Image (tube, rainbow, N blue to C red):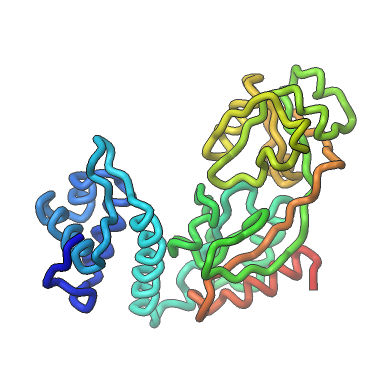
Length: 294
């Protein structure tokens, strides 16, 4: 973009809010309605933001508005900035504000209910909200939550992680499959089948199998609900952890131990820097206590 007269120092919170609304809605008109401004005003605000940053954030060349790579990177930073601003204004009530714990799927597995109950007993004045957010960091990178339960490797910059425990992997197969009656399976048993992969927040990829013994095909889904539906409909089999078996029983799906697959680490993650909630350290301590790890 060409350099304009509107510099980064002139940016205001409204520019970030407008961009985030456009990113969420995927449409400038709907974003304008959400913000209760006109569509031309939203377009001007976005253009001013792009001019100040000297970067194209939104690709307008297609019928459906999409973010550019620069826009996707800026969205996470803008969300964190807006969340930090709102937290700063809420200083008088921050102790009582709900502590938001994100997860992409299965929360803390069998530890979920004990964690929520113990928190309510020990911190009755601070609600703990468990929020499912279907992205790799469960909303943490964009400021939607204060902490998150994450599985598998976490390589997102700006996050601090603490290992809580590991979960064994299991195979998920249709209830009428020949595999459903087995007491245990190995990865090679799934190689002749189509595998459902959650490419948004899942931990299973084809790299789990040896190069010369990978599944015959894959289908991709974006969340646990769609993953379960595909398996129950006999479109595929899947690989997950014991947490899914604990929290997501399904009449059309049988979970079978998969002992030759490596376990999956479960982390409690937060953003680097000052805690976004005064009770966040208490949550970290309690999570370690409940999961039995010092």
